[in-house]
Length: 158
Image 1: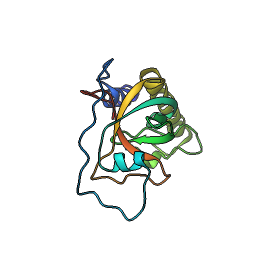
Image 2: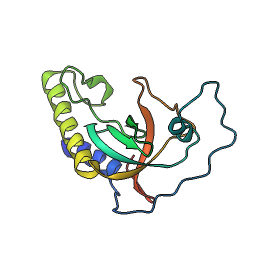
Image 3: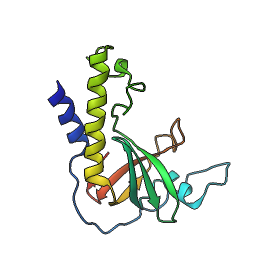
Image 4: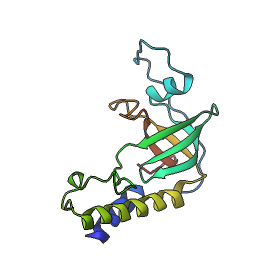
């Protein structure tokens, strides 16, 4: 089971190529908003792909990036869900087949460490492309930008 979970995380994060020439998509002209977003938030809302640098890996599906305007944002990867890194935060009920026991919680924490290290090895310090999803919320429950991350124009991380 442990190997299957690691394989699933690796498949989700696989396909990372090196080097790319970043390009931006044309903003969606039908996007409307009643607030005044920053240019970065406006660009992400319209699914424009932006260049960013990964400055910190928080866990396997969350990281801090420096956007092209110099601001730092915490982003959550769309399409990726890894266990939390703290024994007090893991929720076995979120993971099919993991029992809510000390062993189950310990197992999830170990996998969270593996997922975090994998993300760190693949993304820390890397220049990436980020893109929001027009069908998803722009920000999640904790205020993080919800994005897909690509290491090249053709290699999606999330």
